[in-house]
Image (cartoon, rainbow, N blue to C red):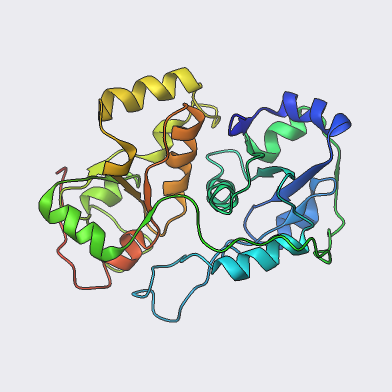
Length: 277
């Protein structure tokens, strides 16, 4: 199953399939204003992360435990064979991409992200409402460990020094180069990381490039490098998932994700680089 679905395809599926829809836009205000009919809402900060008081411990959006995430998925009625569509806002589907990664890493196969987000669905006149979809089910779904590759700060530091793995920073060039840092306390990047901004996965209208375009782009950059020899990160393990989603959509293997990302690295007295390299 391809990882991204168009609004046109979703419109047809809604009439035929028993779908679980999840709205991953920030906060409940926009959800209560308008969302796809029957969609649950999941919040990045409170449900898709286990945020610690000190961001040096895992960064700004560390993953929740498999047990905690299992409970959440069970409350949505999700089962092993559930067909799940997640959506966000137009330009990039950042939290939707993070949720897609988490669902796939939980062992769920039928998961797709809506290309173009809610805006695309509205253009197709897909039905919406304002009612809160309660998380009051108990499907019994559970998993014991994340099933997609993860790496930690120690392994990233080792790779940064040895060069045996390609470290990819998907933040904007300005943040990568240390010109500006609007979120974290220190500007710059992990030494020897290369910069491939996640926004380059998108067309001018905010939708994803075609699988063919994405495949050509990433194969040109990485040539014959194995996914196991690549580490993707961002500011806090969210937009990196956008690039992992793009790679999967292109039919390429999913590399390692460093969830702690820059928000963890920059708070642990690690070496910092600035500039274009």
